[in-house]
Length: 228
Image (cartoon, rainbow, N blue to C red):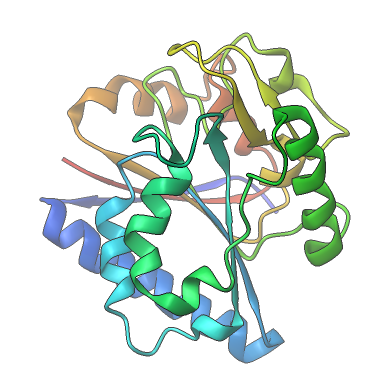
């Protein structure tokens, strides 16, 4: 399967949330209809928050049949505002059925051990290599996805499915899935908001190999959504 970028440019936040929310919910329902469950990998950060709030109000989403995972997490306490999991629990967690199907990174006190346990859960439920039906990703100005940053040795990982990122600009350790997970996703969405990342998108479209996100374009269909 060749590389294919589908651009969706929306005039504002409301249109972006509504369009993406409808399409994402439809795809999830179809996966559940065909195979009885759907495995979803969520993006962290603030970009997807309006989408998550929109999904909570989606009455026909088959919550009991969706397993929710998180692509990466800052290694901070869950009470810390910088925690991706805190944001997800505060938004999607308004739907109680979400919480019963959500897989947390916080499985141990040590980030290395937590990463290893998370990988074991991934393999146990999603196979080896783990295959997600839907993956939501944000993108940094530097082109990072999940917590795979330029220059971090973890970006070159080809065997392990999770790891500890040590090159985040904020200096925090992060636990994250690796490229062997992301490249096997059946459907991948890149969520981009605002003009600040326009130059990064132009570099991505040109195939700049220095961007971590460019690693996802090889031999797969890539779905991209953005608004300005």
